[in-house]
Amino acid sequence: MTAPQEENFMRKIQAEEKIEPKDWMPEAYRKNLIRQISQHAHSEVIGMQPEGNWITRAPSLRRKVVLLSKVQDEAGHGLYLYSACETLGISRSEMIEQLQSGVAKYSSIFNYPTLTWADVGAIGWLVDGAAIVNQVSLQRTSYGPYSRGMIRICKEESFHQRQGYEAILELAKGSPGQKEMAQDALNRFYWPALMMFGPHDSESAHSQKSMEWKIKRETNDDLRQKFVDQTVKQIEVLGLEHPDKAIKWNEERGHYDSSDLNWDEFWSVINGNGHCNRQRIEHHVAAHEEGEWVRDAITAYNDKKRAKKAQNAA
Amino acid sequence: MTNITEKLELFEVFVRSKRGLDHKHIGSLHAEDHEQALEYARDCYTRRTEGVSIWVVKSDDICASQEDDAECFYDPSDDKPYRHATYYVLPDPVNNM
Image (cartoon, rainbow over all chains, first blue to last red; front, side, top):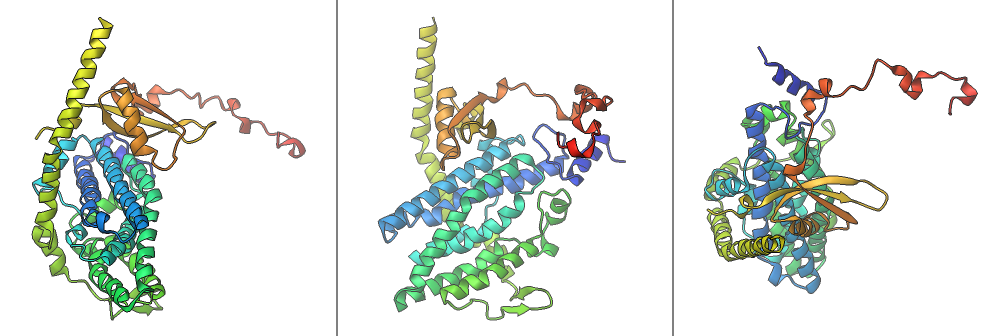
């Protein structure tokens, strides 16, 4: 027998009403959301590293300011998402602790290194592009604060993808060496970008429940298909070769057929054995520890201000 | 691990996107006091001219009704349909009134 509260909860979900922080919700719904939103927040924050790597080396002042603004946006997106997650009763420090100890995951894409300048363009175009497909769908997620966060993020994200594509376009239309660099970045980032949508629906541990609760609105495979379809034309316009030799329009399905992914690689990177997993977390810990003096200074300043206020009031 | 957010208070942020419109809840943040909350809100939530005015309110200071108690809390007098415009059927030529 279902409790009346649970019935009421499911009624709201089915009626496309949002669930808000103070509403009753099943413990598993809360847990599932905390896992997904915190993972999303961590991805925004860890995602600053591969691109941050190139801020000082971007090829022009224009590219530098663009990249700097993009990375700054990612920090903002992390903050929106941490705030949304905190409404579920988990503290910021618990989330950071879970990230640094490996309990919480972040998107496996950020464990790939950015070897050349073209990689930065590929990330904006493909990685942010894939993230947008996912996030557009999540604007309709059933949890109110998450949905509102997604709407804000989507508004800002489009610039990220366009600046990336523009950077790649310039390389693709440049010297043979530049074009080769663009092709190489595409070849390396295309597959991991497809993996961002997660395992096949049949292999996804959280998918079914998440769909039922409308935390997720479209399945991993459907979202991945959308991305595959939209990317074909974009590669064509660049004049680059499609990394998937099996890509073929399927009239009957109305979609492109494509090769299956290297799932061994996917699981290996998720489980900590990507090129940069250890480096990313070590850097996060170091940055946090090296920032201790800033937090101390803020606390000291705030104490001083409070004391002054108390003195003036007396 | 010391975490500064736990020593700070939680604020709710409301932004007026342009003059003549209402302030709208846009998110929350941790800050030491109102002044700092305003500065953080500006840095975080208005990076692209999203607003012309910001309100910050301590989350603890908000007194909220419980949505689940809606039925007994509200009394919209639904048994008095004559309080709605649609109750009155007027001749077609003047029905746009």
